[in-house]
Length: 241
Image 1 (cartoon, rainbow, N blue to C red):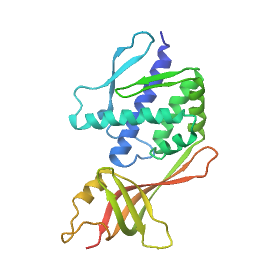
Image 2: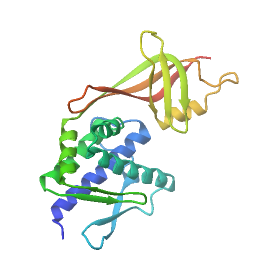
Image 3: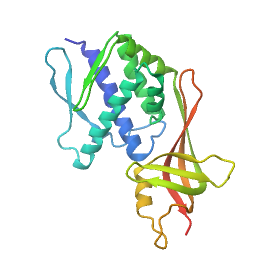
Image 4: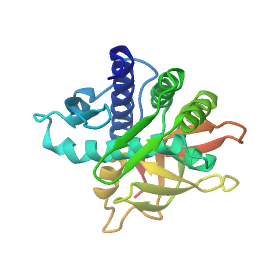
């Protein structure tokens, strides 16, 4: 068996991580507070219990829009990788994974590990492609890391030359108009990707043209490490013809 209050809290935290990461990935970011957008599209249901050791079988709602099914499954896999990286003996794995977190997702991940560690629990998560087990040492390591990590966000408009854009991978590269600034690169939202795909100027793509973009800049401060700057292209404000 398993304590009902403990099981309920851990499942709630796991659902919270998925909901917030999904919304952040789909929309480009979350507000500091308030309702999580698209939360209804990420609802998981307990559809059974596992045999041998006590656990829960989770599945998405059958009436959720099909367009979100693949994205939700992909997000669940990303969250499992995030949980695995948090407890890894290799600290750089967590630092890399933390680049895709926003402050509210980090808070949900922190709550998840705090409850596991406080109750001296271990966790095993199995999906179609992996079988992840974290022992008490890994859980405690993940708790220390998530509690020590801070993420700050600012949103800025930047002018420069678009050097590259990979729609399939949603990645961009831009040289700011101030040549003293280093080239910036990072991920892009779905909205920015659609804008890029639909932008054709006099028969030429937007690559190499001056533009103004709105960028979400995250400063990730891990434990005992220098801060990292992470950029996410929110939208194209203007592309010069």
